[in-house]
Length: 414
Image (cartoon, rainbow, N blue to C red; front, side, top):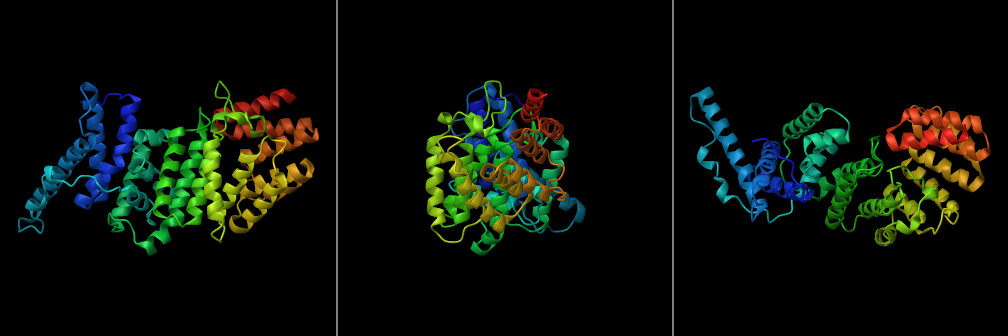
């Protein structure tokens, strides 16, 4: 039966249930890769059958039963193939393949187990992100492919290779011990940070942001914070997401057009999220060592607490960028610091600071460098140079709202 489009509430239900179902099946059968495939088939079955009637009384149990039947079928097929190939006594007794009716209920929350498994050191970051979105976020392969603007077949291969890599590494479906969690924590935080950024500022496509991605990243960061409440950087990461996402409603106009920070209506910022982020950050900063997520959250907090663009404490932001460069220097940090320099010492000083990035191949051709140059040249009254930089930046971005905004800036100066 061909899957039918579910209404949004049912799609959300499936996404919420997917990690619980995957956790229950993977725990029972001990094979993450096969369990993941079986759960995807169960989700497809739900999309095919649920629109035809009512939702089962216990949709989670329904999905587990369907996925488990697929696992049992797969195991029996594997056993039969081995019998044919060897024609000798088999090391695996098919009596050990349990009927799905005796599967345990998903009383355990396996979200964090899935998250740490998807961030296995055997995987590249791009594969870890894709697998996290699929296994933990419940997104389909097609949805993930669209998020990253690649063909669905390409994303399917990427996810397949990721599962194979985990299987080859001998990974077991269990939450790593404290030592191994500590070893993977940086990767877990980095994947969540990348997912959030792609959701908050989509690198391509017709929309400036993707709420499903940023919302999922925040949910997972909350789960990680519950597991590791004393980890200051995890608290800082969650605070950074909350403080940044709090501005989302003001980032676009009625037609989805980009609204820059200095023109945003701050009355629509989410004050509850800002308060939660500030409280999280305050507790984290009191614990001692300060890492890059806490520093970025501190910068976001300064913006969030400013009543207006003019009242923003730019000297404090500049000082925080200086600290951030000491602990986690990167071209984007340097670029943002140049903006803060311009706000404190004037646009000429900001332009001078940008020269240091011209020889850095990681950012020399990046559209954001050109966009910042255009903005600073405009402030200096260098109209022709500003137009050229805005046009170059517009050609370099794959985000349609951002491109339209930059072209409009150039047109207004022309």
